[in-house]
Image (cartoon, rainbow, N blue to C red; front, top):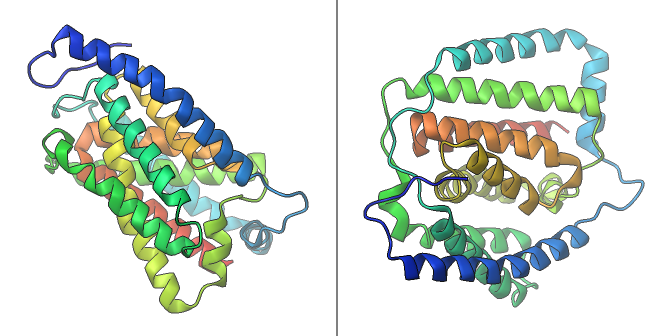
Length: 281
């Protein structure tokens, strides 16, 4: 898999050192990921109100699939007419981005393990600010400009996200989500829901698009798939893994077609849709 470099080439020694460090950190990240998946393993016989809500709504009036299908087809038409990738700042080399991501993510996991008694919402805010702080040194490589026609990319990306999610839910009927944030959101009061909305619809898109779609990704098939798989795995949600990988690919497509802000906005619109959907449960 080839990388597109940034600036002047690194000295061979520094590149070799980064790759060795990447190989050393990767097993630790895999162990952390295994622990995360075991912790979130769904217990048999769970009740998923969102699935029940979807079944009731579909049974009441299946005609709602017509506008959803139209939106998906319209987004697909827009996507086919867009030129990709468009000229953007070059992607960060994978070894440099990988070392930064593993070091920062493992650091977050270690210090968050010391504060397990903190409320989950507070942990989420601290995690987001931690990850955002470490994005600052990469600010020149992220690409914050709005190119011409960026709104078409956002619209097309959102439509593809919506169509893929609905198709996955209807065809696969996935098991209930093991993400604890779903239950916490449904049980929360309105003030706490407002804070969850700020976390899910504002901070999370910026963090995830900055790391997974800007540093770890690139306009190349291998990097796109790698970043999408990492994005899906860190959520530790077995039933939603295929859908998360699909979302990761769409967000990366938008990012390398219209820049980071367009990807953040697409992600925000999608998370807002999920947020409203959960409240509808």
